[in-house]
Image 1: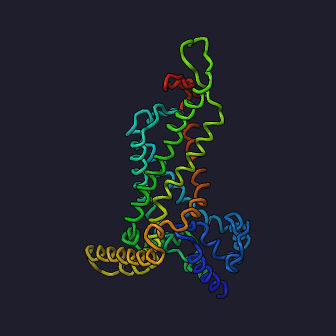
Image 2: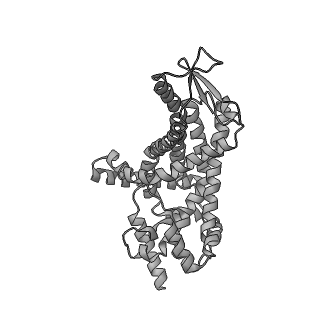
Image 3: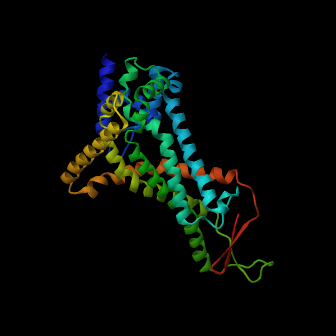
Length: 357
């Protein structure tokens, strides 16, 4: 019982300490709640990092903690990510012909409007796939597992989904739909633009100011062979820029979501009542209105909507950039790894031949 009370207090403290727009991964929520350093509110150290939390949880509960508590949400997140990137590639291939070809380098690169449309479509599809996981995340309480109500995340997911039903999953989904659609639209559009158009423009301007050498077989062309370090640099820069652009949309909407989801049990209780769909829609509409009014009250205290919506934006963006950039870089490397080898790409641009391999 002492452990249960400590975990319950820790769970409440976690929710209070988390910054606006910041969400604790479901696979680490339980490990964080049972960690004594988190319960004692100690200063951050490596023992409170993801690896440190996991090591303590395994030492406390044994190796079965990983397949029982870590694998279920982790596999779900991997599946959602696969849906997102697969949807993006398939949609982009239909909107931009050259992108449908399995080559390592696409030229001409997809224009901004095509990548924006493909990103929005992928985000919309991803929001549907992620809806059950989001519903489970906002309702998760570590004491539910500590007191034996659920023996594992597998059981928690199955029983909780059975309890809340499809209406519980869809409660608040429209906010997630808007956030994912617009956020991933900007995310992929910014990434592709910086990675391709900005890269090509840079190497043309930079090397064009030098004195490009001529190849014997092409005496009338100015040949540009970019240094091999430049492209990875632009790839990293594209990942960072995409993360920031995504946060511009997702950070403020996440604030509104946090207000909306503060009492999910209220909506679950409504879902169980034998009422019509119209009544459910009125309940959801009322919940959105309440969230808006609460947000307006907080915004007025801080001096306006813009100040409130982007409070702690820099902090949450800095924390988000490394993982998001790494995901994009891996995505691009995998796309090139399994692309078809072709001859060196010669790009005619501004009177130069840019040779890329």
